[in-house]
Image 1 (cartoon, helix red, strand yellow):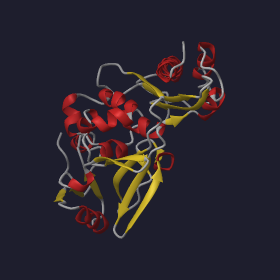
Image 2 (image 1 turned 60 degrees about the horizontal axis):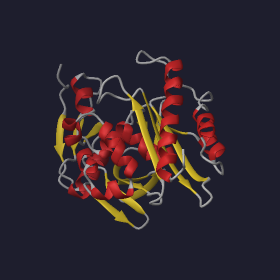
Image 3 (image 1 turned 60 degrees about the vertical axis):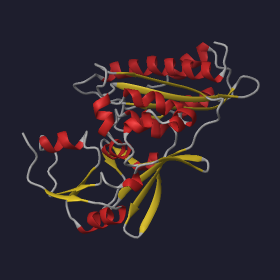
Image 4 (image 1 turned 90 degrees about the horizontal axis):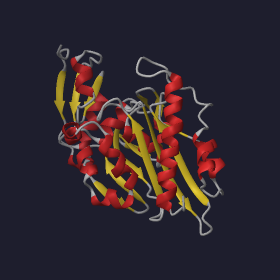
Length: 289
């Protein structure tokens, strides 16, 4: 099957793209196309207009801006994978990006495309949630910042309004002494994760956890932070029994139950993968496990 008839527009500058979005009803944006083109070919999406933003060089960047790292929405996943700045400042992202699809899809796939598609199993959505990412959203004559918790509304649903386009994503690095861990289970390498887990952790001078972030992907309709588990770990010495207890705190989640995996299986994966990620993060932070 091929896509339904559509009117194609190619924007050559950000301002042109914003005006096209504002003036064109029933339009979808084409970035890398690794998720959108299959949807169009299967006619699961059939917009009247398609706005191609691949030529918007101003949306293709990775740079340090004050306390955060800014990545343009059109930054290719392959660029993130090999960025020295990402490896130095956001090492968990550098680790997780290797689980996104395959080399061929990462060559074309973009950061913004993945986040706007907002599949709950997508690694980039999980990482953005874990880092408390901030989304820079533009429309004609206006720009606003939206936290990831506000941006992710539900299954493949974002807070982007009519005429709005994701410009960039801002992630704030953790201290250089922090530990991190990322684990996921997929049926085959490159497949969507059944469950994925990311953890960030720092220890104080006494070896106790003074900051921790835990996020799960693939288990609910959006990536989830685990504030109760984080609170249990704060101020604790990262011993294995304490990490096990925090990893087991998934019973309050309304877990996805579908043809890919039943809810009980996803819960078990969440427990196991969270423990592994916590152990990795604690060790990298300097805990003598």
